[in-house]
Image (cartoon, rainbow, N blue to C red; front, side, top):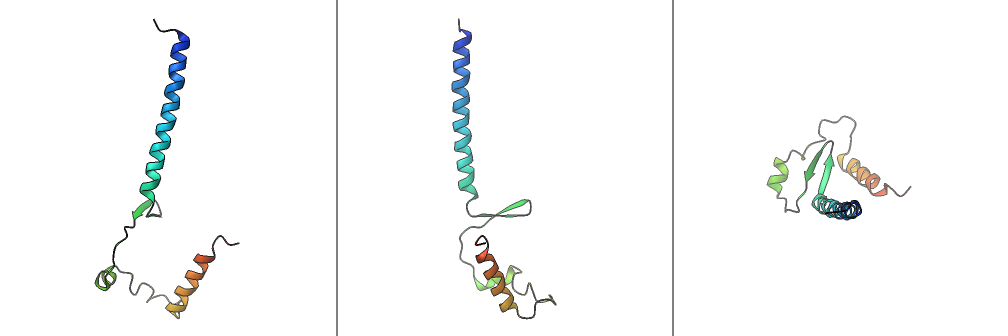
Length: 91
């Protein structure tokens, strides 16, 4: 016959084990998310790959700013975006 105390002790032990398992799962999930970038409500995996000129042209990124009337010099605009991104968190 199991006593109430034995049952309580076993439940506490199981709660500790569950906590450790949750931490392990969270750590594994965190490692999986490395290399992923949140975009809105989606997660997009970014795998380290070699990008060819052909794949870059097909990506839709080339010419993305061509119809923007507020951007006069795309190189200057890109440089200002990089500068702002690099200085985030320095304030």
